[in-house]
Amino acid sequence: MTEISGERTRDALDEFLPSVERLSRLALDPASRIDALMEPFDRLLRSGFLPEEFTSAQPGRFLQYLVFRPDDRAYSLMAMAVAPGVRTPIHDHLAWGLVGVYQGEQRETVYERTDDGSVDANANLRLVEEKRLGVANITTLLPPTGDIHQIRTVSDISSASLHLLGNDIGCQARHAYGIETNCVADLRSGYVNADCDPQPVG
Ligand SMILES: [Fe+2]
Image 1 (tube, rainbow, N blue to C red):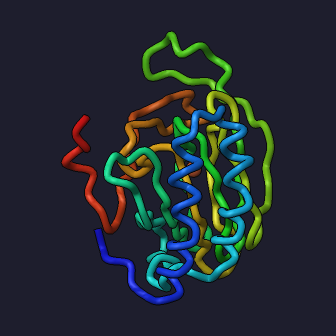
Image 2 (cartoon, helix red, strand yellow; image 1 turned 120 degrees about the horizontal axis):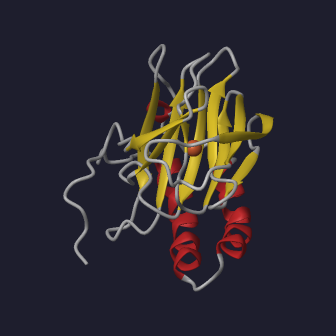
């Protein structure tokens, strides 16, 4: 993984990560964990801590940068930069999460799966809501509902968002959905700056 340097970045992470380490390992239900993490996550999001290279996307692309994950990969902090006009696939996360806009403006479209998963490679989605999200706006992910969405940059500059997930999100085997084709496919998004292998032992 690329070493994250800069005094402001290190200071912000030194303040944030102990809370996450403690709260992510307590035996809390996911909703209570998200509630407890909201205040430290909000403070980190507003701190201006991300290195500039983690907030810029190449034209037509979106890029995911790993900021931190513990050795056992029980959670991950990731920055995603999305070029203007670009949208992610519709995707799930399979873990609790907090997502906050760090730069630019995004539109989040939230979906809910309405089928029972019994037909291979088939998924039916229902549109739940659309949200326009500006800097410091935070949304939450709470499977099994509230876990499927698509992000699109609607600002003239690349958007960047900060993601705290209860798994190693870039390496997690998860799903991408086609709403018009009613299809679902395997997804492992990866990171620009970190590998997924080897998997942690134990
Ligand atoms: Fe997402």
